[in-house]
Length: 575
Ligand code: SF4
Ligand code: SF4
Image (cartoon, rainbow, N blue to C red; front, side):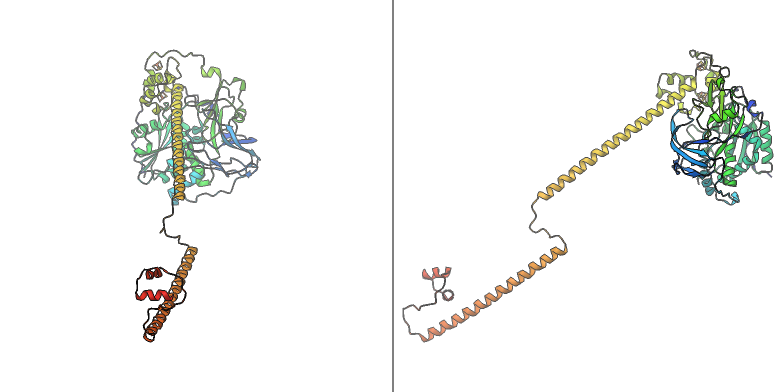
């Protein structure tokens, strides 16, 4: 019996468009493996978050699946060698990004042996703790393969407080030209369903809905067949409309709930993952294999054999174009992603990375570049199709006038850059380009403010340190100059104790000597007194003075000369 409890009704979202699909061309033949190139260029920043840190050195031999760069921080993903070979360079290379900037990359010279590391699979994921599953997925470098590149383990961690009601698997692939998810669902539905089971276990989600647009009947059939008999799973066909594959719009269609502005889907008990991500999670858990390749659609009017290829990360785009027999002289523009949300590439030597889902080699005719841009006629068509219910015309005016505060007041950062407004604009105004410009300028301003704030903090801290050191130096100088207090306690050291002891002994010796002298004096005085007393008793009375011993005159002598006569006077005369 099915435990499914999600509502079977489908809801609607505002706006949207029905652009020409152009999907058939690349689904005419089965997907195949891309050729192994002589060299793979692996940027260490292929995902949302911090770039990975290299852990190999130039000259080192690496095996397929070996970790060559570690995740740096929580929101990051490691990078693995897509095949065996030798590391021949670690330096900055241009990366496929709208900025056109370069990033640190590891270059591997392939050896053609495609030799795997020894990998270990989880025997039974149902017996494995969800936390351990998330850790394996993180270490396997799995990120969202729908195009965003957000580390998947984070979206599989609802936190202890949150309960996940619905896990939605996004098989919508609404953007024209792109067919990689469609082909994967047709050809490898078993891996996708096995991956979804693991995700559901990791999230402990109550129910699971797999959403597929109704322009992919073969994919729908394959997924239904693979999911047969799985409790709590439902596969739904949703009407084809762009941008239904955008996360917030799809959640609204499936659950009827709106994800709040600036909020996350998890806040309303929903988690949404791409079907290709599910297959990568299956390989990480059941086979123990990290993410080293993905399906990429090679299409566009300049490609003679448009199709889907399983491509090793780091493969130069020119190798894929060659394999699909592109007519180079026909390429007017090379685009990574779809025609609505993709961006132009200026170099065919750029590598395929984890977020590369499609390469379009478009001709001049295909791009319809001859339509001139005209002034806005305030028709309001852009607002009618905006799936976020913004006012694109106002955003355009404020972005164009560089009134960035006002653009933000009109919720510029809620814009998902879907391009619906540009698509319908009768004046051919490249509206999304203005929004991207405004977002970039605001971001740059914020970074500069942040930097100047940090610089000010550093300056203030330095001034404080200089002041403190100056005060300490002055206090030391003042201490040295100050007179020592007389009764200042001597430092408590063994030497000080010894000096104190020596002083004490010397004082005692002096005291003993003085006592001996005093005793001797007393003895002499007593003897003199006895002699005088004897003389008095034996000598006849006369006025003639008795001669005494010669002595040094003392203060008492002078007193005696002045006529003073006491017993003490007699004693002094003896001395
Ligand atoms: S669709 Fe174009 S012309 Fe019409 S209001 Fe919007 S920006 Fe102006
Ligand atoms: S690009 Fe932005 S403003 Fe234009 S329709 Fe899409 S969400 Fe709305």
